[in-house]
Image 1 (cartoon, rainbow, N blue to C red):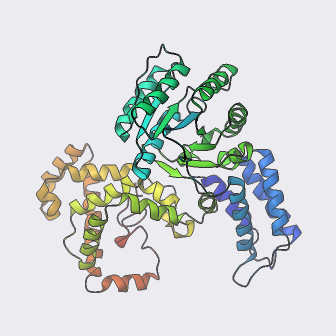
Image 2 (image 1 turned 90 degrees about the vertical axis):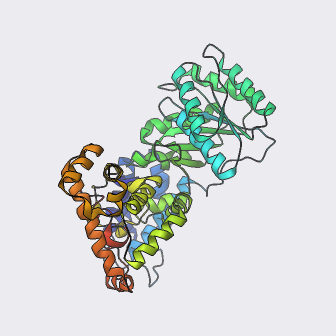
Image 3 (image 1 turned 120 degrees about the vertical axis):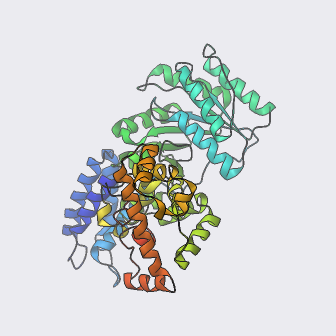
Length: 465
């Protein structure tokens, strides 16, 4: 996320290395690079100007403490101003009203409103134990209604079917009445989108808004849309009394322009980030954490929350005991670990939240979660005995496993070799060897994630071709 912007800002700050203090001249030179980095990231011009003016005003003459270099002091200023641009800490959805609380989603076609409606429903059901009803007023794209109905079933929400020949306002009113009658806590209304802003779309969404009087009016926008996102945000903000923004497809956004521009244009907080296609891929937006990620400082707090919510603690403790004892770890355990990675959004999602200095250089540009899926497929093609005792896997068994997983024998050999390497490392951990290993590493990762480096660039080679 925001890789290009992170790289450009890091290069700009590097120009301050070796300087004794922050002066008007060296700050101005660095700010020119920061300005170019923001413009290339598709940040709106007024936002760039306001941001660089604020940074300059704070940076020039900043007192440098003994624990900070000029570059570090400048990064702190940029971090604070990034947080200011993106808004106050997330307050979450306003649910303080007589049920059903009505949430209206609006935005352009292709922004991901329908998927976001399901993600939001899942968030409310799992995190806040709410009973949620979903409704689609998109009569122009019948597939949208079918899609939302299927997604509702996946996330455990109720769905109110409607006829594509009905009027959108009538569908919305019927949904409100249904939610009241059957005791739903929250109603999420998905509206139709267009390929571009037009008067007819705005008139329709305004009519729906007046008919159902939602408590939350959320603008859903594709974070990769750049200036188009800014223009759409301005148009919807003029048409509706927006209460918040949801940025979708943030996992594919290397630039970050929309994240920095939309809040400035609308004046409304960014509430959530969509970070993948799955219904669980929705993150609460924390400006200070996103600012840290943009500056390559990582987002360890979000990573900890992600691990706590997704990882099966009992299984993790079981594997940890095996690692400490240096015995008994088999392909069943490895499969569980790989599946845990998948449940947390994959390696890319995890590494996106780690500080850049913690990432192994070998992992750069080589993260491919398809490799995890292939390794799980290989393990699934083994018999229970082969998973428990990999030593029994001979040539004919390898060919059968490869055929069963739809892969080549070479990939089976690679996984077996990686597993053997893991066993070798684990034997070193037995009898206090883990503490010795960690002391020797000085707290660094052994070329990957976790003992034995079973991660990008390590012996486990998730990131290796």
